[in-house]
Image (tube, rainbow, N blue to C red; front, top):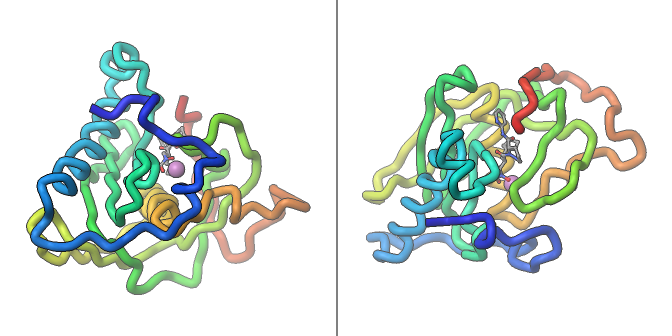
Amino acid sequence: MIRMKDIIREGHPTLRERAEEVKFPLSEEDRKLGEDLLEYVVNSQDDELAEKYDLRPGVGIAAPQVNQAKRIFALHFDNSTGENLSLVVFNPKIVSHSVEKTYLAAGEGCLSVDRAVPGYVPRYARITIKALNFDGEEIKMRLKGLPAIAFQHELDHLNGVMFFDHIDSKNPFAEIENAIPIERDSAE
Ligand code: N9Y
Ligand code: NI
């Protein structure tokens, strides 16, 4: 089971690497990693389990965050976020995206970042993604709203990119052209 002590933080070099493609059929190790990542996000959103195991709640987590430089991540949204999506992806990519952008009005955070970094993080409003599932079958789906933002945050982790790299350092709350803000309740 993944705990907070297993999650590497800002400054660790793995967070700045480009993660490696996963080979299929999946090794037992890669399968377990995918399962563990999903287990983390599910458990972290359960108030009792989060408290019991001291898990910081997250809607997504990427393999590099547990110091495994592999192209795997998990996302989990339940009804409390107004979405319903739970998946583990291997070798994910964005095959097309909208011109329109979006951003979380409250800004983004990260399980690997123990400080608040204020500012808007521009993301594509809608994306079409491809990835492989546990069985090596291709998944293709369209995402918008919070799931689209989270997918882009996780994909960035596979490319060594942190959310604050996208913030305008001179003017963190500068208007983002052609973007729709997404409001949400504070996550913690
Ligand atoms: C975990 C991040 C991923 C999200 C950040 C922005 C989009 C994806 C994460 C730190 C603590 C809060 C939590 C969060 C949330 C968001 C919207 C609605 C409900 C993965 N991470 N969080 N960041 N929760 N809850 O670093 O989930 O944003 O790489
Ligand atoms: Ni993150």
